[in-house]
Image (cartoon, rainbow over all chains, first blue to last red; front, side, top):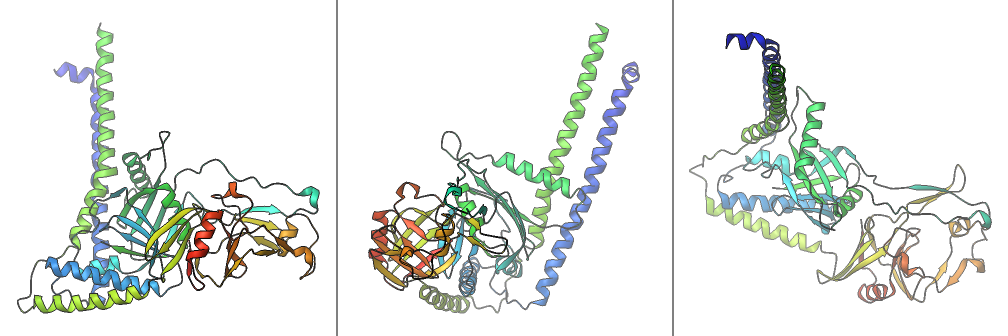
Length: 253
Length: 225
């Protein structure tokens, strides 16, 4: 046995070294990640301390449900006062809506949502923080909001050319935005496959997103919860183009 | 034989190392974020203590009253008996009456073409988003061609009111004016319905146009997104 270890010591050393490096990396990363979460929670609690919220009865399910309904309606009324198109993410009904002046213009069913229980059983101040109208403060997307094509005006009749419209279907959209209440939302469009059925790859998508997050934030200093939503690509693109760059968003949880 | 055994053992080492990398990648990519989220959630979770002086019945009554008041306010926001919703991304429409969709189908909206006349002047053919109102309804509309209609054809722009600006039988049987020169109307190019090809107006197929014309009164809301 001793001979075996000696004979293959390089193999053992490399394996142990890999294990130690990976373990050390993971432990440091985990500690950093935990600190970041604690910091994010403390920051939120600091915000709550500044607001005087009456949370009486929040632990009673019937009252909690009613308070949620009332709050959702209050937010709807506030949104209705604005002239712009707004986004409603109703996790209670698994729908995403485009709202204007109190009218639901588009209601898309959420095909998949991760985490499945996003901010479940929150305390009342935290619930209000998440579900009060928020604003998009940063976004990026694989699609464009206004697909403007520049065409030079012809100088005479002979120069007139027929404008060709794109016939190649655009790839499904990935729309990522950050809200001013520190929530990140990633909406992924699900296109149709060759069999005309929805071509869903949730696991592949989530692995890709989380790996990208790891790459961008190896040792996280801050934490922001991310909600991943998959919608039909048609709806996702329509919603993306409808909502202005700094649009308002309201959640119902 | 000894050589093969050595290769097999080093292959096993490689498999173990790859396995370790995969395991730690899994932990870092998926497990750590999940733990973070769970901790975040539990850090903001509710407490279960109930104040003994709290009157549940009275609170529920007050909430129900507030709910009814808000509900009435929300109902007052309803956009009237009949309205139209236009989706400019998918080029579709939905016609509502008594809060139900009574007709839906394809339409055509702005092409997003920017017609560049010179370095200072251009026309963007975009259907505006937001809420508009039917301001006027007309049968057998005659199109008054704006400047861009001549510019895009490479023709000289005639003066305002010139007879060459008026063109009949190109907007279908009906038109609903929305203001700022935007209209809902028909088209000669029916096969293009469903594509973004207009100069900003909303084009409908003949039957759909008739239904929209007959359903929407002057003052009806048209929501465009």
